[in-house]
Length: 144
Length: 144
Image (tube, rainbow over all chains, first blue to last red; front, side):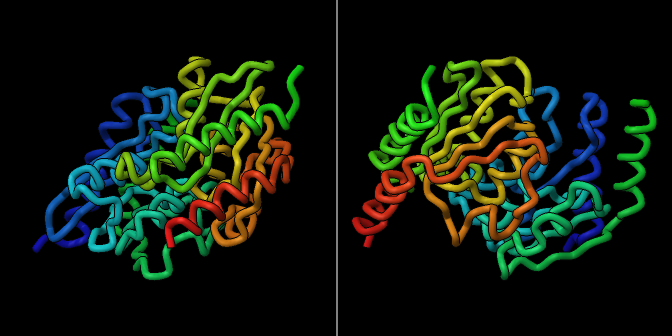
């Protein structure tokens, strides 16, 4: 069985796709019973839509795969701590487990909405945090 | 010039559409320079997607109309206080003004993420609050 590091690498691959399109490099995958059932990477610039975060797309894709909108038996892997919007979506989906890489002290849900997640959602932080953060830092360094 | 009550009635018409489809009746419109540039009603059941709230769709539609993702010169009217997810989206869009009808003490952003909105967003509450709340109460009464 693949572990959290394996799936975070998959999320990182999504984040790289975002970077290649000039998007803030955040990637996400949703896993259910050891199978990736949804993927997403940030597309806010490409789609001209603030709601097009990696997690939102992965959650929507996973629900499409499952044919049901609840992800209580799924794990969402995302390279960067979700923002308030995404935390709200992760909560509505009653996501079973959330695994994120780098923390986002400026925009992350932990600061603005620490109780936003569903009470049953298990949270694991810091998986491949350095790789996830480095991708972000490199992106913003190039932007300057 | 139309006022907040006029546009909230438009949002209520969207909410009625949701109710007619068996959806929790929440509706939203985005107004820019006295013109409605985005509409949305809750479609979470129909689309099988927790992210398909009225506000999310109105924000996405408005950005499509404008060809830009920021709504700083726009007002979002929504019949019920936005949830954490929608408040996050409203913040990312840097929405100029948010007007909502009924409060939502259980799921509203004011409880879980009181600082989630953009600091420059003007908030007006309670426009047609009774009508907005009645639509919700009637819906849940029928559901029981």
